[in-house]
Image (cartoon, rainbow, N blue to C red; front, side, top):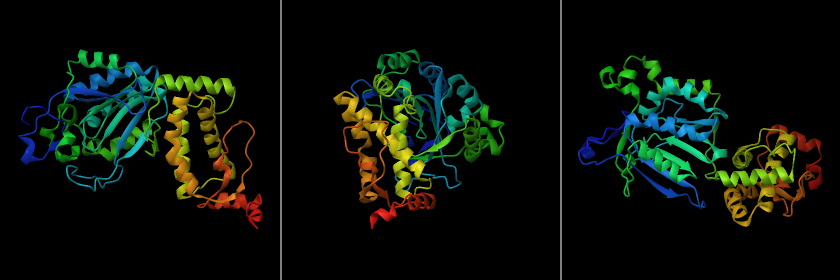
Length: 363
């Protein structure tokens, strides 16, 4: 590269432009859309700074966090991203909330491989704190936080300057490379003595998924709730519904659960009628928060669920019929999600609907 800045092994600019690429350490920041006091930081750093930055940031997350891992489980890894429209999306895994120190100890033996492999992205987050750090397969660090001064101080301690025009590897045509494609002498000393199976992305990432009991997630909704917003919602729900089985559930998780439920219903719902109604109860809780929250926050939540709501509208049939609405939550709005039934009923759900006389009511 023109500046001598070295990317991790797994990312390489195309040869005919490499001599003209100018990459330098730096960070920039911007307010998140629909958030008055939450920021997205983007940073390009030397490889040696990734680990220290991750460790320092982890101290902001409190005692608990969850680990994020993106990789390609199959052997059909993409090889070039610069100008291709065929680049598949990686599979995303989350761990449950665990002790932050436990996560760091678990990933330590894998960290060098996670940093250098061109087909891996990873990070740490705590949604309750409104904070996330992610190192993408593009080898760029992204931070989300509502405390921009603390993040600016973190970059200052690591001597990473602010940049008004940050240049990133994704601005240029480049290749993603597996660690298996390098000879021993090309690998960093920490990786040179590892076996081929230990360098295999699909193997070491699968090991991490198992060690941290991670589960696959669908990247359906994209939103950010600040720590203040999460605290407001939690206080409202506990005051309105003390002891309710959803009252202690992280609200951001409920939003994702509703999106996942709608996606499952759109494809084919495999659960029974009780499980189907549990999905509708999630939407009840979301609606309760919309109705009792301050107008600005309520509008934001409505915007977040508007897409899955629209999808659920379109997959409902028999809307003249209505499932029984539970009386545990009193809502002002008519609950469209109880009107009708989804088209793609799995065998178990259809059996339960037959038993409760749903189809008899249509005639």
